[in-house]
Length: 107
Length: 114
Image 1 (cartoon, helix red, strand yellow):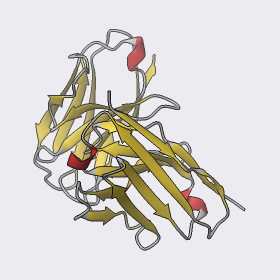
Image 2: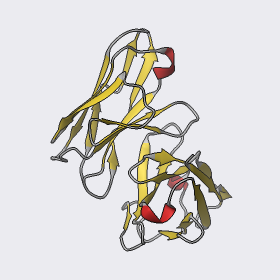
Image 3: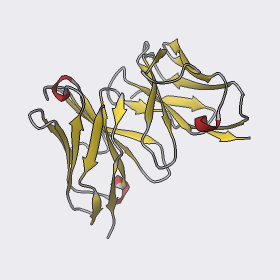
């Protein structure tokens, strides 16, 4: 199974900050990597697919990069509505696997 | 507008069974693979099972293999998860998701407790 490791597990940031979350795969997954945002009590929401493609309707402050084993999600200017937990997921092979999540909190 | 609506969750005793349903609308259901993903209380996301558009390919997480069965009815735009031999550790919100997570339902809570 491919293990997905996110870092950090949590972070505190201020409105307007640039935030970067890292996701590392235990083996190469090409660009078969997605990012999701989840707010408390809500379903996950797709942000990025194919490592760097923005899902329709997602604001351009979100961006993804990487290929192979190392990936990043960047939020260019953090806004109040962006405080949430973010997950990466590989879909290169089954079983599909998620990172453990990164909780973005208000500083 | 894409809609995925799960139903069928509830309280069940260990060893019991439950069948979850996911009603899809707003897209050509028969063209997409579908997935079940669960989230235990306070925990992260865990993939459970996937089924291809024509049901030709089916995959399960090791944690549910032999106990859960995924199926779909393209004529009814519906996805199902038959869950047998339920355990306390199966307690979670179960989400259906289109493709590789493009769209998600609101989830249905399954609680396994005596």
